[in-house]
Image (tube, rainbow over all chains, first blue to last red):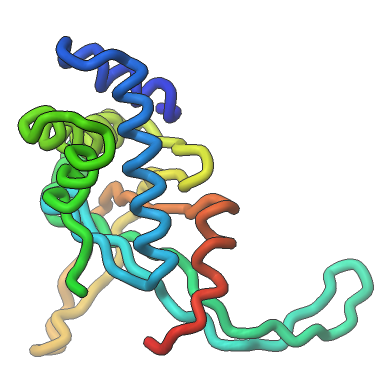
Amino acid sequence: MTKSELIERMSDSQDHLSPRDVELAVRMILERMTTTLANNRRIEIRGFGSFSLHYRAPRLGRNPKTGTAVELSGKHVPYFKPGKELRDRVNTS
Amino acid sequence: MGALTKADIAEMLFDELGLNKREAKEIVEKFYGEIGAALEKNDNVKLSGFGNFELRDKSSRPGRNPKTGEEIPIAARRVVTFKPGQKLKSRVENYAGTE
């Protein structure tokens, strides 16, 4: 399912909002989730799961083309932990 | 500040998009509900700019009760993983604050 299919399905199952409003809402939700994580604030969606940042320590990497070592600085990466309800839902099919 | 919740997101849609409170709450429920429904049907979800929710089938493996040391097999299962998109990764990567 792509973002546009998600917007379609959300619009189909309710009739008081236009697909355009739904599209705008989806865009705002994703933007809000992104800025939340960019500020290292957690997201907790009951029944779905939680998002947080995990820290990756600095390490010595390699340029795959030349093989020379490059220092990679530490960084944060987004992490998603599915909630119990979602875990159970996908695991029964 | 505490974690961002469905209530916070609904409030944003109420404040910034002019939806009424009931509509705002419904849209938030549908957003996560439809993603969950697709995953339940073994359909990966691709949200460009944000990331992909992917399903992975794990085969069974031997496990152990960490308290008692007793061996218990872990059954085969399907799990959800999240692969952040390039845009999300680059926006969080440079977070410079402390843990």
